[in-house]
Image (cartoon, rainbow, N blue to C red; front, side):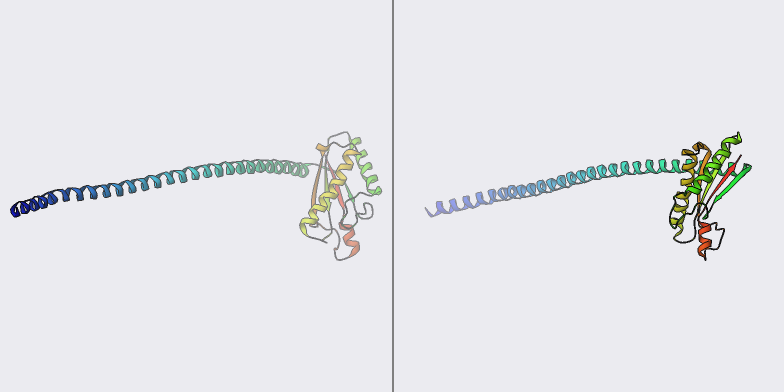
Length: 218
């Protein structure tokens, strides 16, 4: 009886020794497998996230490129327009330099009576321009009319250039609308306060500098 019990214990011990390593090995295998699966899923998630970021970055880059293309196109159009105006101004300047001066009429303070900061033509100035338009139409040949706007030196440079242009344009519109001179024969230019004919230090001098000069060239 004792010997049988001892034999059974020995057999049980052997079975435990044989089975235990297999169980441990299977458990470790499952753990390692689960860890590998977890790492693989983590890598897959990172890859998917990077792909989404790349896609978003590409979309944002395409949008910015399209926006820049639009701005470049607008800038090119503005540049072309400015170049066209510069060429037109250059052609007019060349024509003025080469043309023969026929008449030069200065509408200064005693006739035009430009008020401080004003660009309206007086009745006397309109009469002068009407007489000049009659001369031009009676000349019988094509002419070029350059109208210069001038100011005194009160105020900033940009303001005076703008004011001089407004005065020149007032004369240009009158010559066209009331005098019947075609627009293609007229050009307005502003010198602002850069070409004074009298002392800006006196009231009378400033009044003389507020003027419009009309030059008629063949």
